[in-house]
Image (cartoon, rainbow, N blue to C red):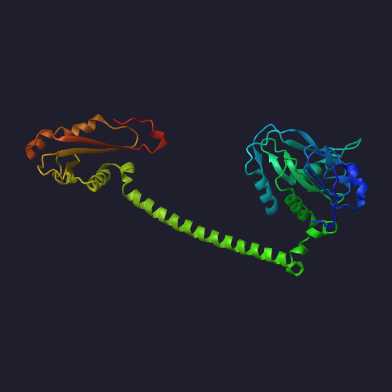
Length: 355
């Protein structure tokens, strides 16, 4: 990413290799607790949870570790897509942020930062948040540009998986403001005029996959739309068909019960069609088994639907005219069935017990 790089375990060792004024970016690794004044002179990305402080968003502010997070839940604020993807990759298996360092912006110096400056520093600090503790709304990782120098600061003390990728995307973001120090991250490198052959091939492969992704998403959305349309049609058919067992009463319910019984093999007779108008009500249905060659078996059926109760004993009085039935059919006492439809799909009525 950079044409020249220096590495050292301690800042004193680094100072023997290069002058701080030649440094464009300082990357602070795990376990490092201080880097002298070097972070004041360059862009800085810190991955250490042992570091003490970094330059704040304004001249008289400083970014420090606070106390530890005490809650498990976290939030990911709106970020550019490249940052968001990295963050989600880091946290995909994360279940808790309890124990992470909370980051704080404080005033520094004898007088501290003026109230207006500290307010601006806090606003930039929170605006650049990468991970936020849910309950307290305190950043656990952040990045921002310093207002006085346009130098970037990022602190990710939670041990990201791909640190090189984080350095790259952060420098790419900062290069929009500082394209002199971060020349290798400017937008000009995205132009095909300045790409090498391998970059062109990779960019072409990415573009091809992006196009394939868009086409696949469009196809899936069409399939979903078609299935949603089919679902709506089937739902209407069910509402006008077998679901009437749950939602209707009176004659509609009797008709649907009759159709269901016919569908499972019974011969069904609608008694209302046999009773003369003005005559007392009798059973709703008579069932026969077509496989019974003796035709000796027959059941009389009463169908009732209730929205708010589990049935009524008065329904059984509809069988009081059994002697008439027995004379008509010259039969012994018939099999009797009481079919009850309750509004039990409604959660308000689920505790109602059937008769």
